[in-house]
Image (cartoon, rainbow, N blue to C red; front, side, top):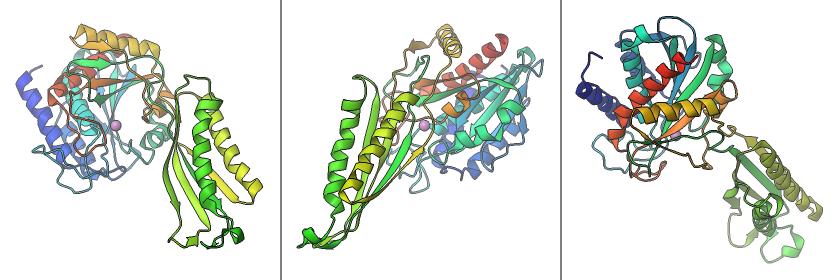
Length: 382
Ligand code: NI
């Protein structure tokens, strides 16, 4: 590499500071997209390709041969949170913050692009760079997968990283199989008959029915699944009523259902619907909409092994990834081709999706180097 290590580090920190201070929400990442394109255009050896969505970037670094082809993905969107981290490059926009590290992912991929472009004479194929919009909401991964670009460009494998606080810098976590969950959403409506708060006998009060339902939903996991099966049902919103002396017509419950396996999800959905329907025998009218979000991630065993080997060889400590009930739409790509996503330790800056979230940026340039090394190795092994 003709650039110095110090200059490389400083460039990545400047990418990060720029992106962190200018966060954009899902499908609104226009300035972020422009910034990424500008940086890639200035990197000799990177070719920006047509991308079928209005935000996000698709680019290629062609090595000696055009085939084989692999891809690295970074997500680029931020969250609707007002930043309270106190960092000097904090968000300039109230109500928007990179509180999940997608600015780190984007900066690391820009860095990997620079390394790979320098190395292109020795690359045994092409590396495609996917800067994906709307990971946090709005189904960005699914939208990109549906465009068909992975098949169109003959992509054989896809890799990505995600920052993780609570693990030291210099450590990564990777494992085979599922480590993030299916993310499904439910909305339940219970319609009774409203009236005077003093005359419940003339009404069909939806509030006690909603209260009983909330309790009985919590029995699904403890009574209907094999003990030890990871699953979550959370009722996260309860809405009913307007004032103290009126029995309302309707109660609405919203929440989320998560698991690692389709058969478990099937049981959870069935049992939720059953419990809602049972209220109809008491005269309530009900609806239960369950919307499936991204599936569980599923790391390919061979790819996970490759990440672990490359990381160990380049001086990282490698640990087993612990399953978590968060969602990650990288799973949409893993449904099409083998893929693996690993965690990069970023210190002790608190929980993601929190206004005080901070990252240890000493992890940034090693993460960029690791992405580049994984890509080179993946091509060499095709
Ligand atoms: Ni994230």
